[in-house]
Image (cartoon, rainbow, N blue to C red):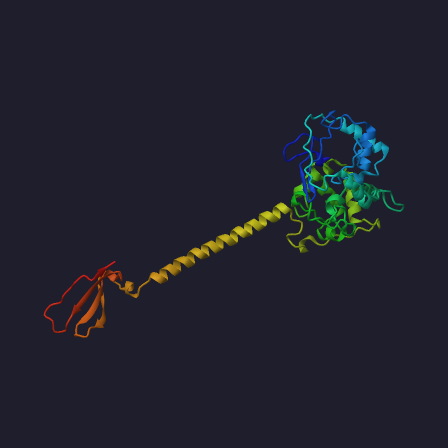
Length: 358
């Protein structure tokens, strides 16, 4: 029911969920409180059963498959009645959820009939002879009410579940979120056991001490944390033994796993931002030091190394054709403050004109 409650915006229970941004448009989970106009208070239990199990509204229009009704097709009449009575206990909310924002051609619901013909299949939730009660219960929950495949299985271009990638993860969830693979091999590589997986569904804590993030954190907080211990153990049993063989292998040694295995999206982003900032800071310091050294080398003059800067230095610039000698005197070792002196070797006095100062 977390889909119909916008917890991030502190919305009221079942009064409408957060918008789901998909390639087909933006879908807003509706208000399903018992309000007579804004919610489902005007429905009959037959309307409710048809919507949940068949995905058809009381007016006869098909619902968009963003509503996971295909997983609920196996609900019994008693389960439908229990759900109906539970919904009637929720306080009614008078505010209707916003309408979907879906463009052409997906705005025509009649096209959903083709989609339903191609992808609408009842889930396989029947008990299997020779398997344990926890396994059968886990199958019923995973394949039905918990609808794990809705997030952990990739989609086709038409938005249907890709059966060839069942439980292999999905990198294109609404809003840009991702769901990891929950295939047996990947769960074992992640260090999962029946015990710690059941515990994670209750607390949100991973085997390495990290925590679920994103939409899975909401699933735990608003969904699986309310299940019984037996139901959480049943889900873990089925996921780690989907064939019902009764043989659940031991996970890989945790210490041998890459330290990033099991990181949440939030932790990945934090780690990447930290590394980018560290590299940028190092490059900035390197650039400043390089610029300082370059500037110093370019402006350094050999005459500036005189021990006593108060002693002028001089050099012969050239000997003129008339025998005079042109001497440049650098005052205080500065090349830009100089005197130019011209004299003949046998002159009684030296003319000292100020030739230039910059």
